[in-house]
Image (tube, rainbow, N blue to C red):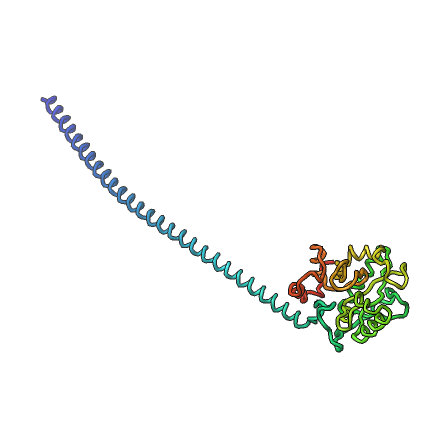
Length: 297
């Protein structure tokens, strides 16, 4: 009997235990399902959030690119404005220089253009006495040309040469007297080597005739001297060019006659192996504003 009670009790315990296990199993299953559902919902929310963030990021990137493009375009416009302002400033500067520069200085004379009897440079300056061919005589040049001429003469002297100025500025009246004397001596032949008054480059004050003591008081043979060879090689560096080379259309070959046209134009003529009178007057006039500009030392 006792055993029957024990067996019945054990069975009851087992039933209770089995029921409890089933309960807990069902409860756990429900919890897991709820957790899965919550996780799935959270995952969907996270996916939607991530998608929204990605969309916003793409919009932000696109907006940033639009802003960058707009910034670059604005920078280009600003650079264009700066270039325009720079060009305008440069143009104004050139116009101001032109307004202050004698327009006659680069004009073609020599039977082409005419200077009247009242024309003279605004200011004249004497050539240093040590470079004067005739001792005690004063030779004058345009005041703005003198520094260039002095540099040229000093450079030649440093190279062991004896360049001297035998003629410089001549007024309308002085040219008339000179030409009259030549006509007496040479007749109509004077027209081959001497300009009439008003057509001489010397009246500008920018032109000099060079010589050297080695050939005395004439210009004959100057083109066979070391001084001439040096001028042919170096005068352009100081803004001077030979006006009347061999076979020019105006006067006989004058290797002693050099005209100041400015360093920039002289350099162009040297580089292109051309002569001053080869260029059209319009092309020459482009260099007028810079005629007294100094290049780098």
